[in-house]
Image (tube, rainbow, N blue to C red):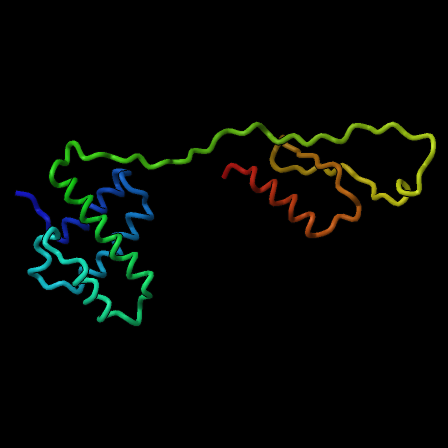
Length: 178
């Protein structure tokens, strides 16, 4: 005989998370939402989730905890409960052929090392223009980041602004593989 109790549904959500059938955060959110709804149920209502009147239970839940939830969050709770019951019943009816959805797991890809090369030398003009006299000059900044690894940053103007430095830092941070 199949067990369709509320405790069994909560256990199914935990199993879904463990097996990777459901995103970890999604499973936790569903489990927490549904557990708070199940707290208001009578013992006889906890015996079979297939027999639950979700709309009536949500109305009761709403009247007991109206100050703690917005209409939007109550709608989310209803959706989480309904979809969880549906998936749970599908699993219980045939656990061996339960359609497993794969969770996309993002694995970091190896990026080629960042190489910042100094700019190519510019041919000197025979005449010096007024704009080139006032243009900020650049320097090469060697930055040792670990043993046997030094990054060289070039092309930074002498009048580099803090906002510009933050943009550069954001690009470098995005390249990190942590």
